[in-house]
Image 1: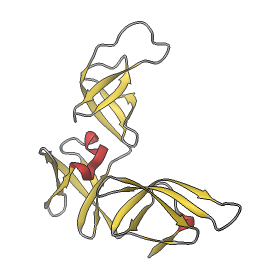
Image 2 (image 1 turned 135 degrees about the vertical axis):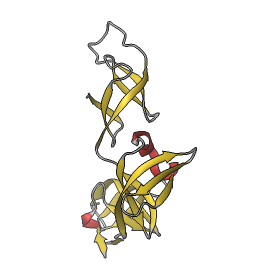
Image 3 (image 1 turned 180 degrees about the vertical axis):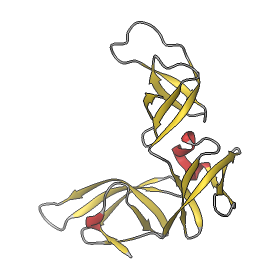
Image 4 (image 1 turned 60 degrees about the horizontal axis):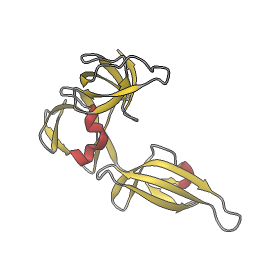
Length: 186
């Protein structure tokens, strides 16, 4: 199975040179002379690198053989994250490079989708929003709040996000996993 270049959109997963990429950004270009083409930014799901690739209009793109498995995050070591299949209880390890920025939003005992390509786990798909507790933040400064001031706060997973001045240690906040931004206090 293949995709046509007219099907390119943000979030589409394609197979290119034996690796699976997701489309981060794209632009259809129709020059005055010559054929149309599509400029894309692609992020490797297994390595986390971003590449620029241009495709001619009408070119065929590989459709990856991806499976999603519900797995529970058990624990992490210095550079490995252990997930357990909820059906077979088999344990699978992913590296911090494979997880990328997602690792800052996963807490122990959380169930998430792990993407598997050719029987190898390559990355995770997080829910759009997660609720995490603040473990460390400076007290809010009184005064200039007209500008909607923010301050850094450390989440229970170790990730640091910008939060409004009224958020304190111990508060639970909702975070958008796509952007890593604060949404609201829970």
